[in-house]
Image (cartoon, rainbow, N blue to C red; front, side, top):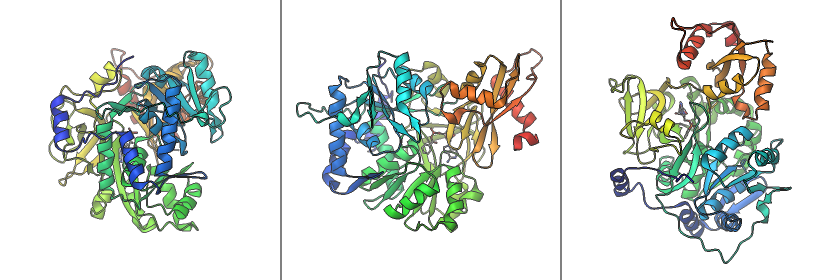
Length: 542
Ligand code: OOB
């Protein structure tokens, strides 16, 4: 099994410890400490369940016993695909206590992505829910078992049928839990993926706990904070910016929303007196639209965080007058760096910028395409290095050489400029992914699926500006043989069992792609040309 490595150079690691960023805390120790301190306070509300901090620890320990009794060994990777239900927490904290390593998949992922995560991480187990939102995840589990019969441990939260039932796990007094190493990799997060399939992001206890401890402070979380998880719990934003982990750190309450729509969420905000939540821009727009006519009392809300994609200033301006709370822009990435506008910043900074970094030791470089620093205030490529930004992807030498500089800076792929006050303003990005409502989709990956169709000669996938989604996916397709219909191509992509958010919103058939004199063109150049050529078209504006 390929070892999990974080690769922080020893001099940097020493400095991050000296500065007090890395304090040797671990997830299991943190949960125990919180359970002692806040035992009877409510930690989690979801569906008809309410768990105290003591309940959460108890359930996580039972889960840890169950995982270990299945024969899983410390260091084994476990792909976790769960919706926003309380068991999300007992599963992942159970894994941490057992020193197993969660690999976070999103509920929208399908067999193709799950198989990729299982393979890439060499996982020994897969944990999912019986069903959610009308989708039966046991069907995913079944087709995975056909492809990987050696995967013995498939654990289901809910009615397990032929699989292992999470509900059957029991405490075992004979199992002793060994302490985790704070510098070890605690879990693998998945990247949005600018090229091809998602990469795996190794995060350590030390670095990740620092990121949400500092975030909790920036967001002024206390025991009284009530955080609503509206986005999928497996995503880095609701997880740690400051997310539910920041709230657990502070002793507050986490409320899980089964869906982020105003109809579902507004009653929850009122009932649980939610004080803070994090949304992607399209959801924030929906909330802004629905709030004025809502009969629900949203006055408990103090902070609305928006991030994952650019929140335009015209929309940002409307948050305070419409919802009566402070907007906080969050510009972060699963690879590390997170920027926040501060709660007491002047309104123009909150509206116009995407914030400044968490840490005084977050190094920010803004460079031109040759790697030279741009003049202050000019736009350029954002590179970053710091106490919670990864130095490598797991098991991916190609991506590592593309995505990191020699001296360990992560190339974010974002184009930003910096204000004199040190705030970043996101201008766009250099890489070819599509940011569809905060979901990052690799153009390569979608093209590859389309090319598998017998009547597709070639395909180029680009992002098209969209007033609601921010960007939508447009595929230019050169047909061969019998020209396929757009809906049939979309259905074909779905039949390849990929997440629905990757299916193109729009398909435009073209006769040929224009080539250069030598007949060669990079895909990046081709996509740029297609966008430029067709962007004026009425058809694409629709
Ligand atoms: C968050 O994480 P990821 O890994 O899904 O995506 C990271 C990318 C960034 O590189 C940037 O391209 C884009 O998403 N992004 C934004 C943004 N926040 C993220 N672009 C413009 N404005 C923003 N506010 O999306 C994520 C992770 C932690 C906290 C918040 C978001």
